[in-house]
Amino acid sequence: MRTLESIAPAGDTDTDALPPLPGPLVPLLHEVRHALARLIDEGGEHRIDLHALPLDATLIDQLLAFIGRGEVEARIDAMGPTRVHESAIAGVWIVDYRDADDQRLALHLEIATVPQILRTDRATLNAGLQRLDAGLAGAGDPSPPS
Image (cartoon, rainbow, N blue to C red; front, side, top):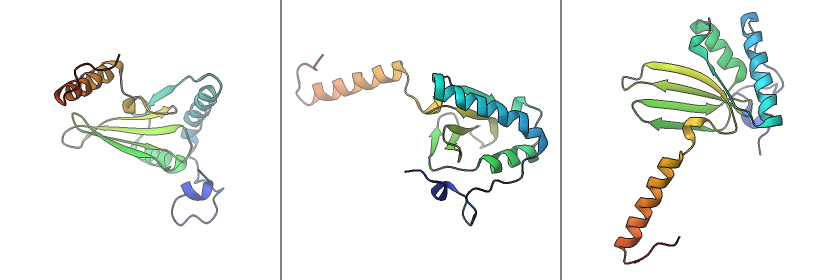
């Protein structure tokens, strides 16, 4: 079960305290708030490309500190490492796309139950089914179930 204690940064004694919020981040966090409410009410997902906004590295670091780090993280290795982690705000994900040299290509906030990059698309599911069927046929199973 998620609790504030389980997702608070190490050493944080006041679990209700948030770091200071620089003024330029307020409109962005309102966008996140509205997207999260829409996700809850309608299931609508939203993605924000942080590099497309007029934010310097300091403001991005302050934003990431403000939203914190949650319990879930993943790493995807496809054309370079992509790091995904949920913020301390459930449903708000940080997706950090990198190239083969570990240089950042894009940094997104994704408001979703599960980030898009972690979902398996239909073509990949079909390929998995075919692989399993081939394995079953190789094990002597003459006909896979339909």
